[in-house]
Amino acid sequence: MIKNPTNKKLAVTLMTLTIFYAGLKLFGNQRDRSSTFRENIVAIDTSAITSILLSGSSDPIKFHRNNGSWEITLLSGKKVSAVNSKVVNMLNSLQRISPSSIATKDPQKWRDYQVDSTGKRIEVFEGENKSLDLIIGRSGTIGQRGFLTYVRLFNEENVYAIDDFMGSSVPTTPASYRDQNILNITPDSIEQVSFTYSTNENFTLENQDSLWQMDGSIAVDSIKTAEFFNGLKRITSKNFADDIETTSLGTPSANVIFQSGNKREITITKYDKVGIVHSSTNPENYFSDTAAINKIFVAKNYLIQPQEN
Image 1: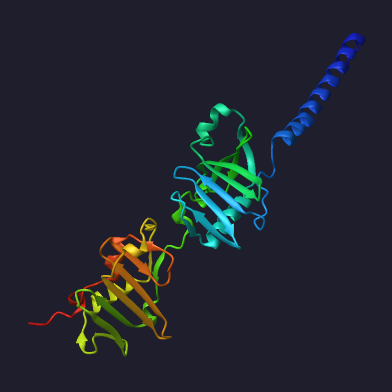
Image 2: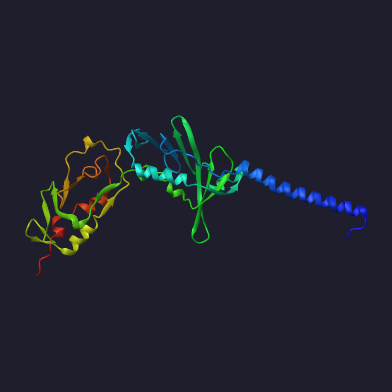
């Protein structure tokens, strides 16, 4: 019990100041958080987006929506089709960004988080209006399974930590958004494969009662034939030959036609002059890919069953 009146007044004053300071810290921090921390830093309407500019470690990628479909303008000025679902997936990943904390407010530390010129910048436009300007920085891990990525709005200083978001969900190469398919088949559905070569070493593989034969009667090596078909299940390439003028390709050096039970045909064409391959399943694109060519175009003698001595 405080008997001295002076001490009692000091105690009351001290208690009042303590309560005031605690309240100031509590409500002051809330005001500071509300004025600097963004609960939502990405607010885009994917249906209203007309163009996207993505720049980072590689050359800038320019996306434009043309009659509902996305296309990419290459550095050469050539316009190529993008796979709509790949662009949509990239935009959807941005919409899932939800800040968990502020990593720093100090511009001097931007490089540490790679949210300066070393990061990848994505600008989203709705007509003339820029609805998003975001820099995606480095990623890290939380514990043994969690992960996070640091981001910054281009015109702001705050660097945010985003849990469960990977910067790799926003690729920075045009090929990542294009149709990379050369061949995608189910081997069991193929009934006939016809090989045509400029050297006239032509032959046909036919599935007769679940056994493959060449040209109707020649036995094939079952192991090599199985390996051949297994290698065809899904062939893709990022090596687009965009600078090739198709008129300069000349006469094909080889064709392979895959025919399935429903009479659907897939034609793969090879041009030896410049090492180019083309698929009827992806008619817009040409590829420069030796590995793909070697999987598809095999020699007749390679598949023939060796004769027993």
